[in-house]
Image (cartoon, rainbow over all chains, first blue to last red; front, side):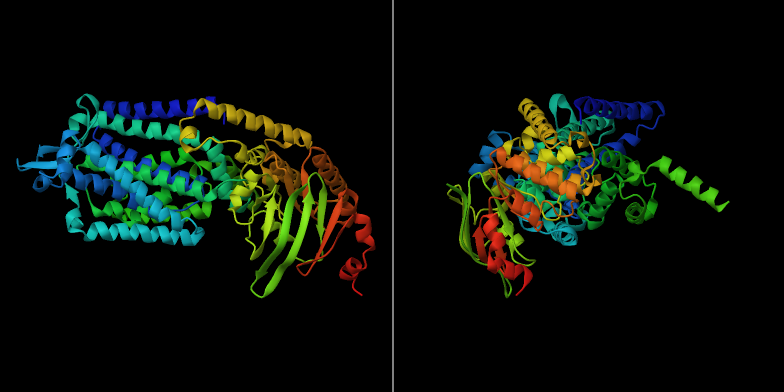
Length: 357
Length: 251
């Protein structure tokens, strides 16, 4: 792909983001920005999953697990009171470099927690380690077997967060402090910061998107696509398929984890439903409707469907809607919704109607 | 000096001895053909040399280096490229992109540098594109560059696959039935290409059933039957070899 096309796409994306914000401002429904911001963090996971599924051709029905790992670890580290250990050398060292700090909890008590940045860093490192431990053995599998193995991983994460007292069991973790960025700007859910947070979240998606677009149009992207098409032939051409699949898996896990970290700070809490298998299936459905090997398609669908879902448009049928989407897409538009050639369809319909006359 | 040395190679699948005590050398710069009736173990031997399978016993040396125990993906970087009996082009990629994959071992941009789109990756990419176009021109298929590889005719797909293997700049090219499924004109052209490739200094080892092609282009012929080597000689002597005639035609 030429670079011109890339810049046009990226600037179009940027203008749409600004346009949506202005639209909510002038139509007086700025409260919609909250769901749009949350969608952005889910989109981070979705474009990573799109890279893994659409380009490298490796399915994962356990990505909500990585999202939850990021969210839960940062939530736990920023809320768990370390006061009882405050005389330990390691904690003194952490406090000195600012990785741990005292803050006031909801009831005005003084608690010692990890700084959100330190917690996020630890969460990402742990995600990488877990992704490597899970990915190394399961990526040898193909097709249904890989799907089932990743599904198993998702279930394990879900049961662990649900069954662990320290993670708040079914209640999850709440009272999570904001994530401070530069100049007093924070990732938090306060209405005054709503517009800021909208732009913060979509900037993260924008930067990630730029990186991924670069990646798929490079030597690495080509090799991933080759692995997808014919793994044996790509090995014969010298592609280290094991390494490429694992690196893509880890990259997508990290993106999921980062999404989880920021959404947790934005919401101020996280619950076990974030780790549930149905969420993983939802993400797979969104990548499928976006057209699998189509980063822009997945992003657009991720934005629209997550927004609608978060606004409650699907009501209690939310999960059923995503299940139905998966079936319909597989049957009628395996190339994704954006690739359905409307023109061909009209031609097909008109041809049929003529014939019947 | 021999480029490829195969020493006492054994490979069995369950009870079937697919390759049994096969040894041979391929001299630098020659075209060597591997023939034998169906099920003789030719493709197994190919898969052993290209690292798809690991031998039960025996050794394979390339340029004096042992290659029988290294992972398959490293074989290409040693300078061995191959084509497949059943064409294995990458779907949903253009012919040019397929050939560009062949340059993988000659480039080194990784995940991070590609994501950041560092300037050296652009240069690399430009060179890869130029080199691949050059190869398409050499094989006379440059007009197919932007066409989806799998929508090409069978003969064209064979040539694109050959170009992809050549893009690796191999010292040894393994061709698994390069003329299978080609018509007479295409087979003749393929023969000419293989001769041209040898002139470029690339050693060729090929499996082929088309005897007229084998006899015309190869310097040496190795005959396998039931996993064993039964003859190894120049094409003329092979045609007169009683054992070979017996294997092919029966008593």
